[in-house]
Image 1 (tube, rainbow, N blue to C red):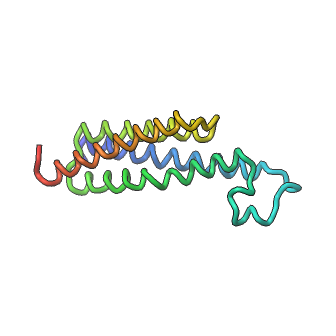
Image 2: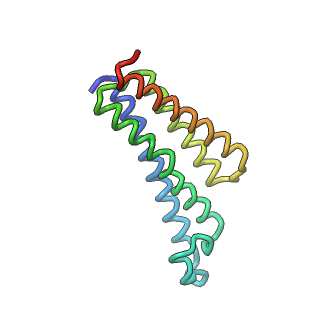
Image 3: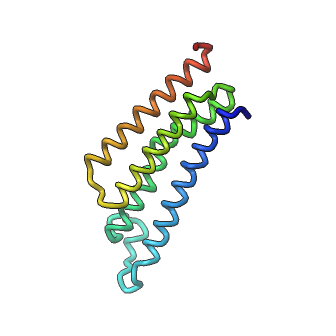
Length: 140
């Protein structure tokens, strides 16, 4: 694997690590609910959980939205031998926006900064895919 490929794969691992950390935080938040407050509807209704557990759960869910396109793009880049330093840089920038988004989402959850971070990640991801298409289809 090239150095650019290794850097790109490192970004993939970082995104996986973020998702794993969020799942661990979710387990901790849910196990932290006193047994006396547990209700049957918590098994099927996210809104039944305390706010902190819902915030973390929503952040976990968001790791399976845009990041799915990131994982697919990274896999294609690696399989096609199209990974380069520009793509690796975009990948790490995307993951950085996901980390910031998760921190906002599980913290004070202020909507506009969270949306701005989401939008930045979205734009970076589109740039990644455009670059991937150019590289894969024989462009510059």
